[in-house]
View 1: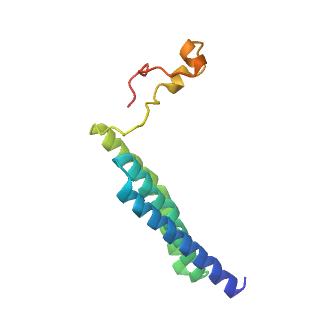
View 2: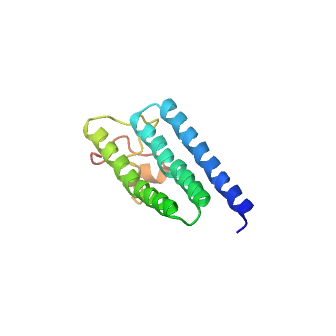
View 3: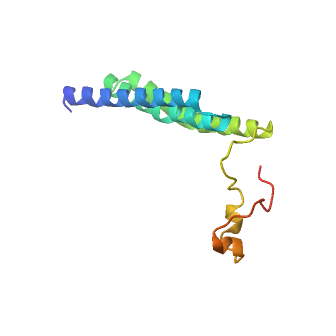
Length: 132
Protein backbone atom coordinates (compact mmCIF):
# COMPACT_ATOMS: atom_id res chain seq x y z
CA UNK A 1 0.00 0.00 0.00
CA UNK A 2 1.07 3.50 -0.57
CA UNK A 3 2.52 5.32 2.43
CA UNK A 4 0.08 8.20 1.98
CA UNK A 5 -2.95 5.90 2.00
CA UNK A 6 -1.64 4.01 5.02
CA UNK A 7 -1.02 7.23 6.89
CA UNK A 8 -4.48 8.53 6.00
CA UNK A 9 -6.13 5.29 7.18
CA UNK A 10 -4.22 5.35 10.43
CA UNK A 11 -5.22 8.94 11.14
CA UNK A 12 -8.85 8.16 10.31
CA UNK A 13 -8.74 5.32 12.86
CA UNK A 14 -7.00 7.49 15.44
CA UNK A 15 -9.54 10.28 14.91
CA UNK A 16 -12.43 7.84 15.26
CA UNK A 17 -10.86 6.48 18.43
CA UNK A 18 -10.55 9.99 19.85
CA UNK A 19 -14.18 10.71 18.95
CA UNK A 20 -15.51 7.57 20.66
CA UNK A 21 -13.27 8.12 23.69
CA UNK A 22 -14.48 11.70 24.13
CA UNK A 23 -18.11 10.69 23.55
CA UNK A 24 -17.83 7.95 26.16
CA UNK A 25 -16.14 10.33 28.60
CA UNK A 26 -19.01 12.80 28.24
CA UNK A 27 -21.38 9.89 28.72
CA UNK A 28 -19.66 8.98 31.98
CA UNK A 29 -20.29 12.48 33.26
CA UNK A 30 -23.83 12.95 31.93
CA UNK A 31 -25.44 9.56 32.53
CA UNK A 32 -27.74 9.39 35.55
CA UNK A 33 -26.85 6.06 37.15
CA UNK A 34 -24.30 3.28 37.51
CA UNK A 35 -25.55 0.95 34.79
CA UNK A 36 -25.70 3.55 32.03
CA UNK A 37 -22.31 4.88 33.09
CA UNK A 38 -20.91 1.37 32.70
CA UNK A 39 -22.33 1.31 29.18
CA UNK A 40 -20.54 4.58 28.38
CA UNK A 41 -17.32 3.13 29.79
CA UNK A 42 -17.70 0.07 27.58
CA UNK A 43 -17.94 2.36 24.53
CA UNK A 44 -14.61 3.87 25.54
CA UNK A 45 -13.20 0.43 26.14
CA UNK A 46 -14.16 -1.23 22.87
CA UNK A 47 -14.58 1.41 20.19
CA UNK A 48 -12.28 4.14 21.49
CA UNK A 49 -9.33 2.00 22.47
CA UNK A 50 -9.89 -0.33 19.52
CA UNK A 51 -9.72 2.39 16.90
CA UNK A 52 -6.78 4.08 18.62
CA UNK A 53 -4.77 0.87 18.74
CA UNK A 54 -5.65 -0.06 15.14
CA UNK A 55 -4.47 3.39 14.06
CA UNK A 56 -1.22 2.94 15.96
CA UNK A 57 -0.71 -0.51 14.43
CA UNK A 58 -1.08 1.02 10.96
CA UNK A 59 1.47 3.70 11.91
CA UNK A 60 3.94 1.16 13.32
CA UNK A 61 3.88 -1.15 10.32
CA UNK A 62 4.81 -4.82 10.56
CA UNK A 63 7.09 -4.66 13.61
CA UNK A 64 7.35 -5.99 17.13
CA UNK A 65 5.58 -2.84 18.33
CA UNK A 66 2.49 -3.70 16.28
CA UNK A 67 2.51 -7.25 17.67
CA UNK A 68 2.54 -5.81 21.21
CA UNK A 69 -0.29 -3.43 20.30
CA UNK A 70 -2.38 -6.32 18.93
CA UNK A 71 -1.75 -8.22 22.18
CA UNK A 72 -2.93 -5.19 24.20
CA UNK A 73 -6.01 -4.91 21.97
CA UNK A 74 -6.87 -8.58 22.52
CA UNK A 75 -6.38 -8.15 26.25
CA UNK A 76 -8.76 -5.17 26.29
CA UNK A 77 -11.40 -6.95 24.20
CA UNK A 78 -11.37 -10.08 26.37
CA UNK A 79 -11.16 -8.48 29.80
CA UNK A 80 -13.37 -5.42 29.25
CA UNK A 81 -16.72 -7.24 29.04
CA UNK A 82 -15.80 -9.48 31.97
CA UNK A 83 -14.94 -6.48 34.15
CA UNK A 84 -18.12 -4.65 33.14
CA UNK A 85 -20.22 -7.71 33.92
CA UNK A 86 -18.52 -8.13 37.30
CA UNK A 87 -19.19 -4.47 38.16
CA UNK A 88 -22.84 -4.75 37.11
CA UNK A 89 -23.24 -7.92 39.15
CA UNK A 90 -21.64 -6.26 42.19
CA UNK A 91 -23.92 -3.25 41.82
CA UNK A 92 -26.94 -5.52 41.55
CA UNK A 93 -25.88 -7.51 44.63
CA UNK A 94 -25.39 -4.24 46.53
CA UNK A 95 -29.04 -3.44 45.85
CA UNK A 96 -28.54 -0.66 43.32
CA UNK A 97 -31.61 -0.65 41.09
CA UNK A 98 -31.52 0.71 37.53
CA UNK A 99 -33.53 3.83 36.84
CA UNK A 100 -36.13 2.73 34.32
CA UNK A 101 -38.81 4.79 32.62
CA UNK A 102 -40.96 1.68 32.39
CA UNK A 103 -40.70 -1.78 33.91
CA UNK A 104 -40.23 -4.26 31.06
CA UNK A 105 -39.19 -7.28 33.10
CA UNK A 106 -42.48 -9.13 32.60
CA UNK A 107 -42.73 -8.62 28.85
CA UNK A 108 -41.22 -11.99 27.96
CA UNK A 109 -43.62 -13.80 30.28
CA UNK A 110 -46.58 -12.34 28.37
CA UNK A 111 -45.26 -13.17 24.90
CA UNK A 112 -46.73 -16.33 23.49
CA UNK A 113 -49.49 -16.68 26.03
CA UNK A 114 -53.17 -16.34 25.22
CA UNK A 115 -53.98 -13.98 28.06
CA UNK A 116 -55.88 -10.82 27.21
CA UNK A 117 -52.92 -8.73 28.38
CA UNK A 118 -50.56 -10.43 25.93
CA UNK A 119 -52.94 -10.21 23.00
CA UNK A 120 -53.79 -6.57 23.69
CA UNK A 121 -50.13 -5.58 24.02
CA UNK A 122 -50.53 -4.65 27.69
CA UNK A 123 -47.82 -6.01 29.92
CA UNK A 124 -48.55 -7.31 33.41
CA UNK A 125 -47.73 -4.86 36.20
CA UNK A 126 -45.65 -7.31 38.27
CA UNK A 127 -43.27 -9.92 36.87
CA UNK A 128 -44.24 -13.54 37.45
CA UNK A 129 -40.90 -14.24 39.16
CA UNK A 130 -38.27 -12.07 40.83
CA UNK A 131 -35.53 -10.93 38.46
CA UNK A 132 -31.96 -10.80 39.72
